[in-house]
Image (cartoon, rainbow, N blue to C red; front, side):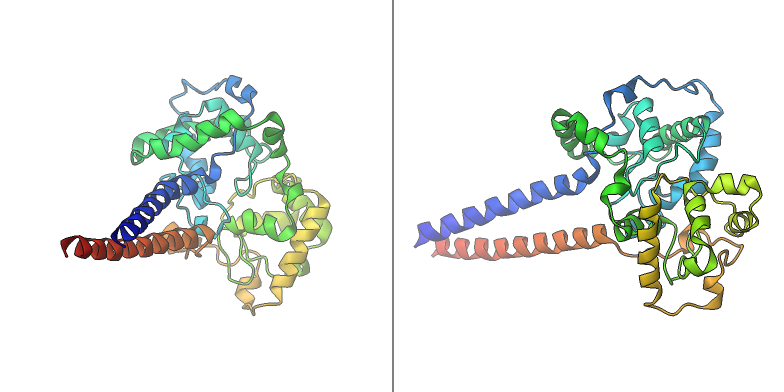
Length: 326
């Protein structure tokens, strides 16, 4: 009998250790499969010795990137919790060990919910952002968790095929309208919950024609520069924050609009929220509420499960000790 109980305790302890060991790896590995093609490493940084690049990059980061990555680049931005996947911690060893060319490629191409900025930011601006990302690691050094972060990456780099790398170049085609909205649009927009970084999109199809929306999503800056009155007003009313250009087909935009329309029927919204611009005074980063996302629930679930297993282990261990004493 004692042998059976001892074996049960040993088995339970092995299970606990396995869970605790695998949990951090599974959480850290969620972005580890985004590997740039080998050619990205050969891209040379023309601003590598430009001391002013980081300053310009900081302005861009504070206007665009902070929304998801946070003021310190830790991946804890205003809307990070609402995204389907957690934004990368830009100060981590996993990010900082990548070459400037790889970071430039990733900023340019995007990988939802990471947006593509090859159209909305010039090459010089993208290099400036990279200069500031490098500075973030010095200003706000990350905790020493490189061992957890690096292992999944190393494995991915060895096993990922060229086809898998290329397949992310047009990620929207593999997603439906709801998935695109939840992975990308929620970084800046809500449906019926008021203005975030950008305007509330409830009933957006009643405020703009479909052709206008097509053009705006594909290149908002082109519309602004062309003198389009609605585009200029929308840009000014939202604190002149850049709406990144997106290479999304009309059919996928139709799916997004269909999803927005379906959600627009769910909740009432005030007249002030329907206004494309809302208040001209953008709330501070800390005053915008965060919505709990999948990652938060996953972390809480794993924590509670691990805690329950540990408690059960202590109970079994206590019983084993009593048996041994008796």
